[in-house]
Length: 309
Image (tube, rainbow, N blue to C red; front, top):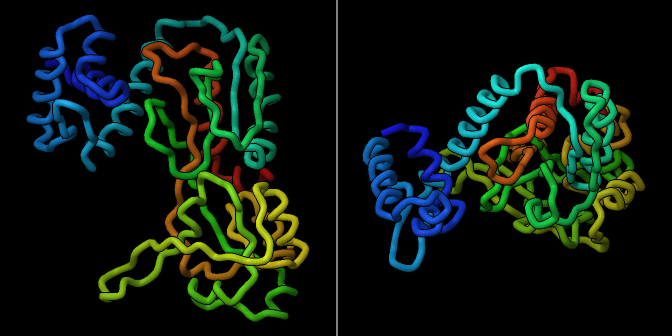
């Protein structure tokens, strides 16, 4: 049986939530879908889906394999489209959304460069911290930062998002320097009052209590100030009002200039991701594929994160 067909079937079932829905969309019997999944699991030697009469649930291995399948199928579609498109120029209207702070610094400045390469493409850029329903609101692509919720969207990792605790040197002289994440309870912490990427709190990597390696823990520091807007927290931090937990792309310039000082770097958690996400489509429009390739190339440059922002 064709491996790509098995992978496409697995992605379709995971996206639609049932064998019956995937079978209906493809116009085949549910038994055929079931046989493909059985063959895939047998070939891999792992269980990808837990199937009951009422619901399907991805196993741990299934969740990891799903992301790889989505990426590989998107790359196959892109390769086929590149050949079939030949020398056709990209055209049409591209609708993109991104988080406000990240979008201002790292998406909006790239749009004019993209249009220089593809002048027949027009672009609408929505900058909002609201999670946009791409299909429902007719967007082609979103840039998202942080852990991705489970969804039927296809994701492409564009880069790493590292976070650091920072404060002004003056604040640290007045109040001391935290030496361990647990020390944050004694400091003024500037926190987001509503943000999907921080619902679990600030992440740190600390030694395990049993002495066997390290583990990631999530703390929820508090302080006299919180805000729904990351830029306001940034400004408050620069004003010396407390310690903030911010992405490197937000604070690297101020750290380099000596305006902010990092703390607890030795406990920094592994990075999460910067992603492009888009609705599942068998054939992405050329303008969307070129935009995705453009973002990946820009963010993948060795000098990018040190130069832009």
